[in-house]
Image (cartoon, rainbow, N blue to C red):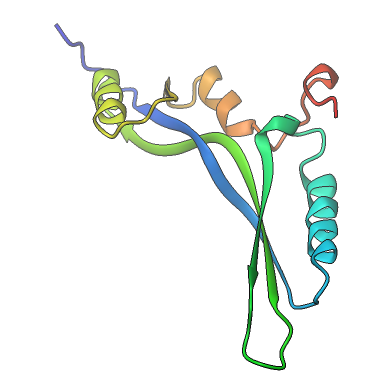
Length: 131
């Protein structure tokens, strides 16, 4: 028997989420990579695990005579909120029906929910952020 509750269950899926984009029209690809490295250092260092950050670089040729556009997209592997459900079984079924492999169901405003939402915001213990 499924017991209904006044609490809501939140579904989070672990996936890559774009957190920042840098666009540069200089011919040197190293400048956009350095800008992305600096942004990560200023905004994410100590707040996320190094393996949870990646930079995707896209190079696009523009019309003749103009510099190519370089785009660095900074992504973070994190628990991404997908929805709230009245029953925990509904959240689990939704995740499985949509093929989500890594997911977490947490009671709204529980300690687990707060921990998930604080990732990337609060500082992590030093042993988790070694570079």
